[in-house]
Amino acid sequence: MGEAYVELMQQARKQMHLADHMVYVTYPMVQETRFLLAILNHVALQALLEFEYIYKRIDAFNRTFAGEIRTYKEKIQGRYGMDAKYLKLLQRLMDLEKYDKNSPVRFKRGDKYILSTTEYNMSVLDLATIKRYNELAKKFVSAVSDITAKTEHVNVI
Image (cartoon, rainbow, N blue to C red; front, top):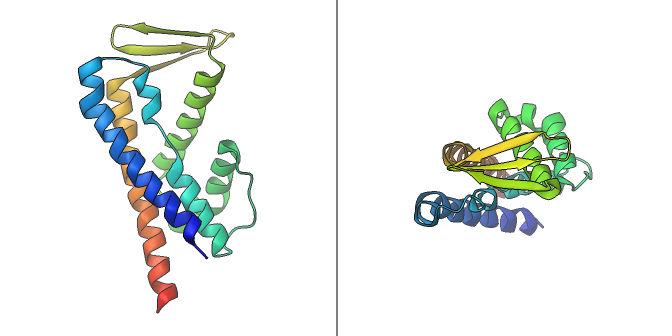
């Protein structure tokens, strides 16, 4: 019954391990700023929403990243007392995905990766920012893992 969210949680943990490797091993060796965008992911959010859906705590939801964030904000964040920093991180990841997808201008300036939209809005990524995002994402994955583990334990008993 709940296999989808279990697989998503496994995928989230693997991606966090990969992100750590990219941040602390690969990037320092190659200094390629385009790697910074590859580090970001939101699989743990998908796992949490799938988990809530399977246990009928939420109805069907829009499976776009924006829809997932909206569902998380409206129905899940308060239920579990999730830190507001997680929502800010998810929104920032969504913004970065939009910049990456729609950015006609990308360039490296020093150790920063700069994305610009056609309206000249800019988003700047650097290793320190990615490290902060990575640490917060690890905490989010851990929190989601704790939520799913507690509920599974209760449902087994």
